Amino acid sequence: MSMQDVINSIEQRYPHQPEFIQAVKEVASTIQVVYDRDPNFAKYKVFERLTEPDRIISFRINWEDDEGNIQINRGWRVQFSNAIGPYKGGIRFHPTVNESILKFLGFEQIFKNALTGLPMGGAKGGSDFNPEDKSDNEIRRFCYAFIRELYHYIGQDMDVPAGDIGVSGKEVSYMFAMYKNLSHEYTGVLTGKGVGFGGSLCRSEATGYGAVYFLQNMLKARNDNIEGKTVLVSGAGNVAVHAAEKALALGAKVITLSDSKGTLYDELGFTQEKIDWVKQQKAARRPLFEYHREFGGLWIPGAKPWQFDGDIAIPCATQNEVTEEDARSMFEHGIRYVVEGANMPLDADAIDYVRAKKMHYAPGKAANAGGVAVSGLEMSQNSVRQYRTFEDVDQQLQIIMRNIHDDAAAAAAEYGFNCDECIDYMSGANIAGYNRVANALIAYGILN
Image (cartoon, rainbow, N blue to C red; front, side, top):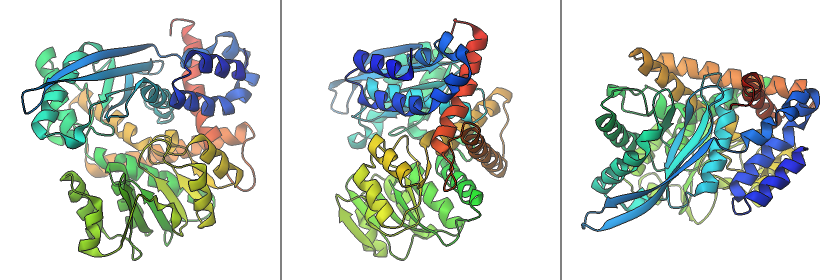
């Protein structure tokens, strides 16, 4: 069966899961050359096996709101592959969460986790619960109810969830408390906990910092550096503010942030004081547009950041936020580096556009792997019941992101995807991550 046959089969089987189909197509488009070299991959149907999760756990969540009304949500955990380690991937609370999105995220997580070099499989979970308009007490009650249903299927050597959109350290702590209460065990079953009770320093910063560390290596490969570059960032959550913070610390000028209501543009560039203000504003669930009252700048309702001149774009908001039209706007405004801080923020047409224009593109499975990398380090700290310093974890993060960059670049070169103008990080990341998982599956026979 050819790669196209596999894709056709998936499209027929899951016609209402566009996000998942998009993720499968993106990987399939680059690994045919791997199959051509080793007939065992086709013989053992490795790719077909990887496109079907080991299991999908679906459950109802009953909880009580502040008025005493019973509310009902849906929850899922997609355990995709544990070929190289325990299932690992975040939990997302957002009204758009559905099985297709979680399958896409879990599928991506297989290869992202493999790229870190740490022993972690791929998984994802979440609920259509919306924490944005809920009180702290309602969030706590929901987290308790969610983990009460899920705890049977997770464990430090089985499946180790973390946070994602809508799930911060607060929500992880609530879920960890309920797990601990139900299991009577104090183990590292969730990552992203508070530092005083098993969490790792640098975890909050890791995804944003890691994206910029990957960018640094991209620039270095072209004998360039980030100092003096103008950076456009989308989003204003954890990943966005820390990507902006690290870019600023390394000498770049960051001029945009955004949220679902619009874009904030600061022609003078953000400072650490301004970024700290944004962190506090978002933590208090207050609107981003109030920034201009404090520091000036321009608030553009309903707009995206890609209408401004710059050198580097780091989309950090959500999946498929960047369309082909947005990518064209980036190119026309001077953007030549696109680094995915979110999970697959470029849609398929946007990816095709930036690759056709020879823009230097870093896919999320490589560029935003810093978060799960530090989660893996947190798992190690929990296992030996020790803490690492912030500097130690940050240094290890830089090493991991450099290795991911170099492995992706080397794989792209080995299989002939690079050109004089740019390194094909998308193909290289797919191949490097795929090979690690696929070789494990072949070694196991047909049991995984």
